[in-house]
Image (tube, rainbow, N blue to C red; front, side, top):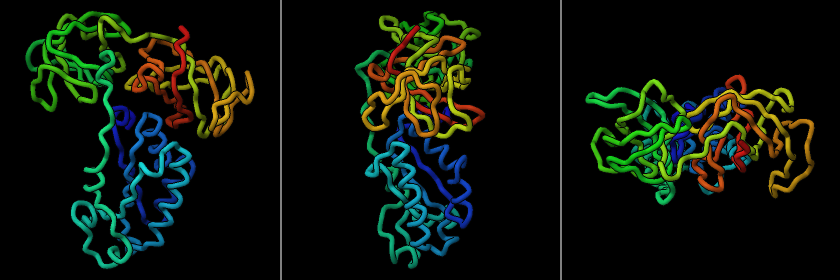
Length: 330
C-alpha cells in the first residue's frame, strides 16, 4: 500500500456502504482512516471517494449522505480540500455508475453526478518539477533480459537521458544510463512523473537497495541521519517523548528511527510556537521535532524539493504522524 502510494498523483478511496461495514472501517484504527491519512501524508491532494455496494442499502440517499457527512469532516481534518474530493455512489457487483450513466431508477431519483470513469478522467494533472535536479527513488531492482542492472521507480524531479552519468546515493556510487523503458517501450529520456525502468552499467547490484536514490552527479541528493521536521500527530496510545522509537517512511525507504528532540509545540493553523521544548506530544498536536535514523537516508528539505520533503512515522503498522522536512541537521 505505502510503496504504491508513494508513486501516486491521485487516489481512490473505496468504502463499503453495507450496514456495519463502513462503521467498522471508519472507527478509530480502521483501514478507511489509515489509508486516507497515508495518501494525504504522501502528497496526494485529489481524491475520489467510491461509495461501493450502495445497492445493498437499496440505493438509499440517506445512507449515502450519512457516509459522505462523516467522511467530509474527517478528510478535512486530514488536510484534503473539499473542492478536491468527489463522492461517487456505485456497485462493483452490478457495474452501476462505474463506466456508464446509472440506469437504476432509485439511484437516478437523487443522483445526477459523474460516473467513476468520469471522475478518473477529470483528475487534474499535477505540475511536474522537470527543471529541478534529477531524483528517482529505487522501488525495485532486477537483472534485465540483456546485460546490466535494471532499477524501476518514479522520476520525482528532473530529466534523465541515455548515456547520462548518475550517482546512486547514499552510496555515491557512479553509474551510466544504458536504457530507459516506460511501459516496456524504449525511450531516449524520462521526465519527472514518469514510471520508468532504467538499465545501469558500472554499478554493483549487491550494494543497491530499495529506498536508495538515483540522482544528478553535479547536484547530488543530500544524505543525512538527523533531520528537523514539522509533524502532525494523529493518534498515539502513549504520548510521544524524547527517545520515542518509530519507523520513518520516506519515499520507498523504511528506516528505524527515534525522535531525539522536541523543539516546540506549534499552532496547527498558524504554525506559531505555543510552547518551547515540550515534555511530550499528544493526539492531534503539531510540533517541530528532530528525528535520527540508524542508517543515513536520502532526503530533501520540503522548501527545496517538496516531492522528497515528506515523511511518515509509523508504529506497529499504524501511522502515528506525518510531516515536512524543514532542515537537514547532519
